[in-house]
Image (cartoon, rainbow, N blue to C red; front, side, top):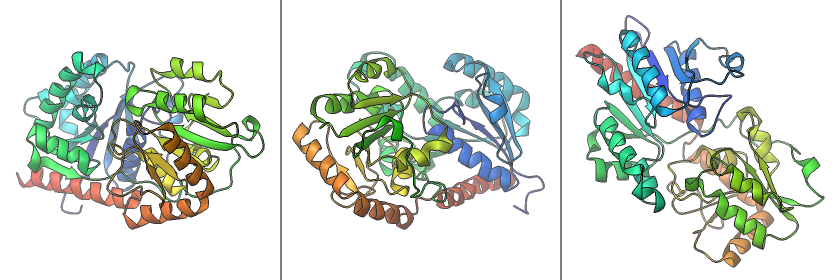
Length: 381
């Protein structure tokens, strides 16, 4: 960094940011923003604000500047961000966004900043898994995503699968960097926790779902499985919020299903350590932070083939990979085995996180290298 006269200036754009988190992008953005701020970068985060949140942000011992849109609506957020960036475009070396929320950054003329776009799970991937949505707005989102990525200086895909989709359909091979998510193994580890003690009977097993309550995450599949096939001593706990929340609330009339709408992310190590198994039956996924966090806490997981990253989860090693079209008997058999071998699978899981370099430190090193390479190109130009 010594070859730069000024400290690099980064503008992150994420509609989610702790404490208000609906998806993993908020955790992802916070990890990068705090790391870079501590390294001496000048960091600005543009995000959405709920009135009760402002005081609890920025208490991380870092010098992060927060800029708040009052609306989470994408059109309102775009309008707010466009005028903010137009006024401050000379103040940033890099604009780094997730999803489509930094889309206005490509429209400013004579901009000097570089644009990094992170693709966690592209609209194109999700489109192929949603028959109903094909007829409506997803084709528009796919077009906007392609325009954004074609005008980005660098694209980060969090998994090889996501990268292959982008290469095949968007023709942007030379811009793509594969940087998997990383988990803080000092925070997410095996601890003693009885978070749900008041909700459980003695010897009940907790099957956990963590994520947005949306079609892509497929929580309704798990609710139906629990309602119709779980034995009395298995309890399904869903932690999340989203459009399918009302439908899932109906399932909570069943004695073995519990919905917890919102939790501070700092509580998540306790959540994982209070469970016996995590199930994530997503229709498509990049590299889920939820899976990494669970594995780091020595919690076995069951996922779908569309969710697996390389061999992160292996049958009979640290969990199982099942299709949602598999018979209920196969799901029940796999759940039963994972529960009976929780200790063995859990130890294997955490070892694999370390071996595959999916820790927060590995994640930070790769991103800093990417930022510095972009900034050096700008200075050389």
